[in-house]
Amino acid sequence: MELASLTVSDLQSRLRAGEVSPVEALESLDKRISQIDSGIQGYLSRDLDAALALAKTADVSLPLGGVPIAIKDVINVRGEPCTCASKILRGYRAPYDATVIRKLKAAGAIPFGRTNMDEFAMGSSTENSSFMPTSNPWDKTRVPGGSSGGSAAVVAADEAFAALGSDTGGSIRQPAALCGCVGLKPTYGRVSRFGLVAFASSLDQIGPFGKTVRDTALLLNAICGQDPMDSTSLAEEVPDFTARLGENLKGIRLGMPKEYFIGGIDPQVDKAVRAAIKQYESLGAEIVDVSLPHTEYAVGVYYIIATAEASANLARFDGVRYGHRAENVTGLLDHYRRTREEGFGQEVKRRIILGTYVLSSGYYDAYYLRAQKVRTLIRRDFTQAFEKVDAIICPTSPEPAWKIGDRSDDPLRMYLADIFTIATNLAGNAGISIPCGFSEMDGKRLPVGLQLLGKPLDETNLLKIAHAYEQSTDWHKARPLQ
Amino acid sequence: MARMSSDFDVRYTAELARLNLSGEEISRFQSQLSQVLEYVEKLRQVDVTGVEPTAHTYPAFNVFRPDESREWFDAKQALANAPRQANDLFIVTKVVE
Image 1 (cartoon, rainbow over the protein chains, first blue to last red):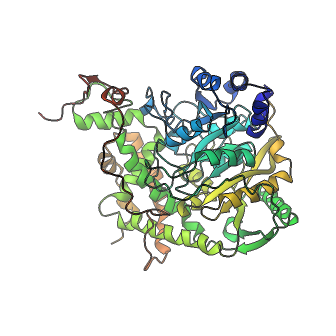
Image 2 (cartoon, chains in turn orange, brown):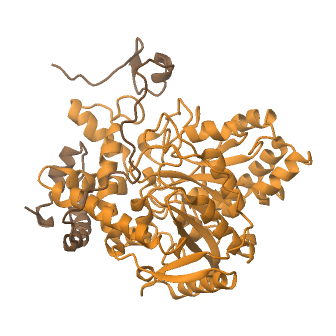
Image 3 (cartoon, rainbow over the protein chains, first blue to last red):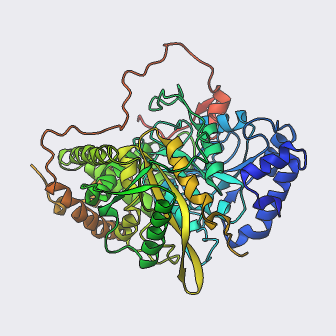
């Protein structure tokens, strides 16, 4: 149990000192999961035998040698399920490793466990999982955020040393904020999407969850790089993202966008974030007012572009080559319609409908094309702001975790939860959420996340800036009571 | 010519998407998605004159690979998740009468 509460860095020290073996670490983790996951339901499945096989031959001198990593159930790991929390992929076993998995294995890491998520990554609470909701480890009546809620919850509850998730509109950063861990979305194109089940191809990125900024940087080192199997991956060199951790913040300018500090933010979130900004000032950073004038259009642009791309990406779930297939069909169209009717959940159907509509003849120009143009303006807002500052600082989520079931009937309200994370996906930039305090609801502490948005390809600096704050506080050491 | 969200027909769109919806889903989605479409109407306020659309944020152009065959799935691997198969082939619903 005690082993499971280690960070990746500390686990590595022990592994390399020979104090503990990869098999012991894995078994200790599995024991921890067996003890507490029934109350959190962060994992959809896990294959201890497959992981043990890797643990037995793990080379701890490798960058992540012997370290188990939990994987969001949307990334293909050969031989394992990849349900995307959907009935339409029940029974599917991945015939290949995603590039990030190939890279993790090459770095000595051990993919272990499939974490719960909103179905096909569509959601902000993990309630859209077809199988079960995941609980926030800090208050089990509340959501962990989404769509990578399982990954965030297991890291926060010491049921994983670290995890991978995916972020299309905030799906790493927002659950990291709600669960009190670190979550990073890389610059679009940094990490290969080959083997990631696609939701919105121009927005999706795989990224790391960690207990600390350093752990997150270690994972990022392992998974970045151009991939011939993903033509959208960038040819940019991969630096050592840990290289500037520990540097001071002299000369760093942080921008507070006025559009992100509006009415409607929970007062306790606002208080914690502003206190963090003051802390940054005391660490030597200069705080600058900036403006991102097209912020109010970001959610609208996103729900046109993301749903449009999703409607195309989910067309492949047709019951022909894999996954669920409807029985006793009357013909080809019936086969398609009923397979998809039976296989997809409500939110997925809703988004497919919306996406199909905005792409359909007569509506494409008014919706999709216009949204792409506004997207250009949103990107420009960031480019202009980054001429004045090194990073943008703001809340991750306008409120702390809400009660499970609270928003199930109000999709639009759910969409607005992503208001501070979404524009970064549209612009293609990197963003990180780090813990910055707690709010209190019903006598329970709920984490608050601080978000830092970086210039494209500037993750090294972003991580440095995040690390400096983290190390000057104790938030990252807090753990939910079990 | 810009269309109004009142033109939004869930039933027709579902046909395009090859998706069966129940009567209840149709009417619920009609109302929920109409709200979303109302919300996105605000994009009309934006002056997009002369603005190029962004399809990808860091576009790479002409990303090619050599036109050579590579090692990939064999038939057995490709059929591993097939709902129905025979003779190294996927069995599918009859398409041609």
